[in-house]
Length: 458
Image (cartoon, rainbow, N blue to C red; front, side, top):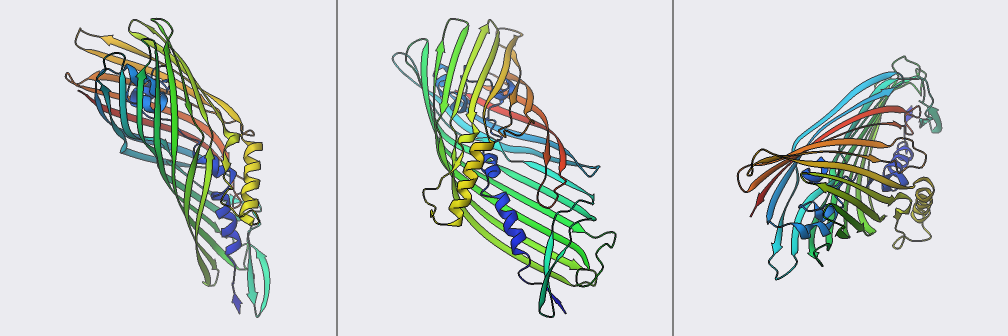
């Protein structure tokens, strides 16, 4: 007689750790932060020296001081994501499309003043997206050391089910990180302004992972290890929250050149995770064993400081802007204050912090953009924008940097409504592997994101 006991826990536990409180997961929480605003993103996000629209609450709140009209805005986001994944020589095409996603809304209000200016703003905006999709399958000869303890008549032995099998993986992620922000900009002199933003950060990621391993060539036929198929489904719901403070300065150096700096202080992210793992092992004679595990984790991650500096040159109807963002990913850390120093969790998170410090590096992100007002008459014109950026990988060992380009348009709809749109296209390549598929897969990813912003001026 064959029975399977305490079989699934070690495998599931290992995978849960890999997907939650690890160095890679701490970086993943903030890795794809892109900001918001159709105008700003149409210029590649090079908005530090400008910031003179509603998106200044994120890029540089000092730019708000130059806004003259009250504005109410709403923005939507559309995604076209494609991932061609190659595993053991076989390529799978994966696509993910989302249309009409809410991306933000808010209001900007210039407060009447005797001299100078004071502009306040409040908005709720998405600054980061977790949307991704990957799947592949193929026959593998490589060992993955997957084994199972099987009890036959009271004697337990481990049996390998680990090579010469057909493997499939699928990983789907949805969600994002948003900020509810109160901000103000104030002009100190005719040429110098400052600003400050306080943001409540919230976010959620829904992640699902599926793995299947099947004995298609009948390699495993001997009782009790006559394995047919192993199926794993793991879901992970991650919720995040925190408070972020950002300040900035803007200076008009002369009538053509503007300079801006902004600083986002380090802040603590409260993370709550819900895990669920379902596993099924099937044998040739139809016997099966299944298991379900549920786990809950709470922890804190310290996000690194962000420092932005930018320049903009304006010549008549043309503005050219550039910005540099410094971020030291190695300063990202799990907070250990509330963790028992004698526990295994403390040792694990301490090792993860050491790994972050060693493996992840400081980077400088580059963004450039331009904006041109094409006037057809004194009352009507179309704004044309273009830009791009280079985002170095935070991983010291990775040579895969991301680049993107963007273009956008802005034009009035009547006297008080402005429509802005921006398309951001990016592509990158990455190698991925895990405990189940150690031979790894190569992902070629193309992403196109369309932002549409409608602003009402009052």
